[in-house]
Amino acid sequence: MKILQQYLVPLVIGVFCTGFSSYHILAGGESNLSYPAEPSTTSQAAPSPSSASRDFPPTNNPKNLTKNDRNAIALNIYHPDSQCQTLIPEKVTVSAETPITHAVGKVLESSSSSDFDLAGYRVNLDLNKRIVTIDFRLAPNSQRQFVSLSMCEQFALFGSLRKTLLDNPQLKIKDVRFTHQGREIKL
Image (cartoon, rainbow, N blue to C red; front, side, top):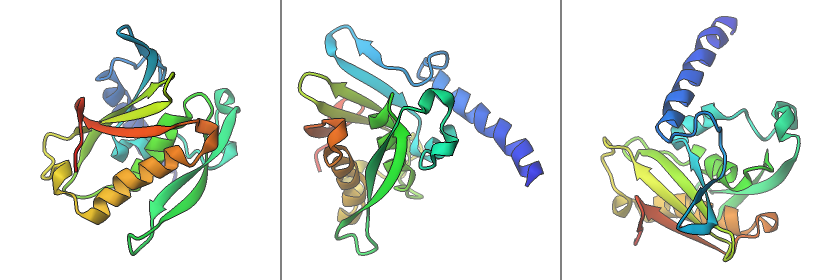
């Protein structure tokens, strides 16, 4: 176990730094970025879902939160059941500084497919309207596109994200929209 930690931790940190350097937010961590054209919008860049589980300490255990994250909040995140009929809640604790981005990351951690690869995503919040837009980036080598997702896969991805963000009253989200590289996803 010690050997695993000795080699795995530096590898994870290297992957983390490389991923965030492409978003130009390495020095700022997961900070809010404002776009000059839309002063009421905040944007939070996030890593791909496959690395999201490695980038952040497990947030469902308050002992794993850092000193800066002591102001954590409990949220329900939703995952589909085995029949893909309903969404089942799971209680997690996320940082109060960026709860929306962390909630999205937690949902995406469990929704992966071998031939549908997300390279990353960006979470944008319109503060006035309380609308969240999740802008996805597909990996260049992804064999499938959003339109090729089955109804169950669409429900798992979009339904889980929508319900997670809308059904947690402390987030105060009124609507959730999905885009791919800035263009609305129409399924």
